[in-house]
Image (cartoon, rainbow, N blue to C red; front, side, top):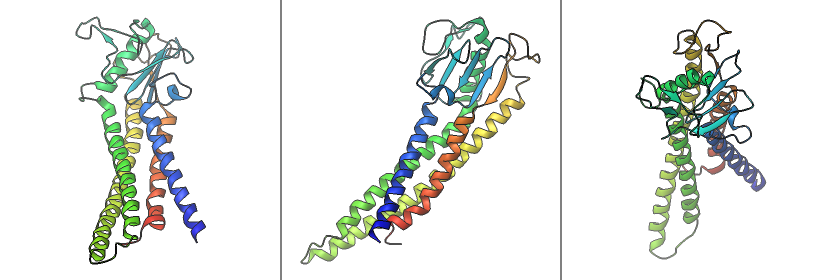
Length: 262
């Protein structure tokens, strides 16, 4: 019985670590040129004629004249525009002070619009990262509640003796119950928010693909040097759905591992 409980605890811990890693990968995708990160993006803007492309992450961009020559950097608090108030706006390569080649200018303009366009802070992507961050906070809160649950659970097993015994046990019981209820509610919130983020990612990509023929900077000619094709990032969407599935598995596992009271 003890071995089975240890296995369940190890499985729950492994799931929790995997979920946290997937959250981190989704959030930092395209933030650097480290192996794998440039491939974690929500939307790719590309020109089949010039081979130039831009990867749009939630909080970062990758851009380059070719798929093997990308420059990546975070965009939170960092503008890629040069003279953004001018009618002749130019764009830097992400994370540099080098003006991007002309083949990338229209795509960087579109990427900047997607990330922080007329829809407000965060642009189109706000419908994705707002529920994603909420889900991450809920999951971290649930893990913290479980840690508190374990602490108070152990405290309840230590008898104080004398007149204070009943009081101490009742107090530990209340803390234990509250920690457990908080963990359940926060995990439920994490599942719902993660599901909303995953669905929003799919919807956002489909909407951008549908509107790609009329997006700023695009043309209907696939061989034009200014034509922009829009495609979704498979890796990020897979990671987001993995977060949903693993969190849903983690939710019922908690009861079999930790729950001792209603």
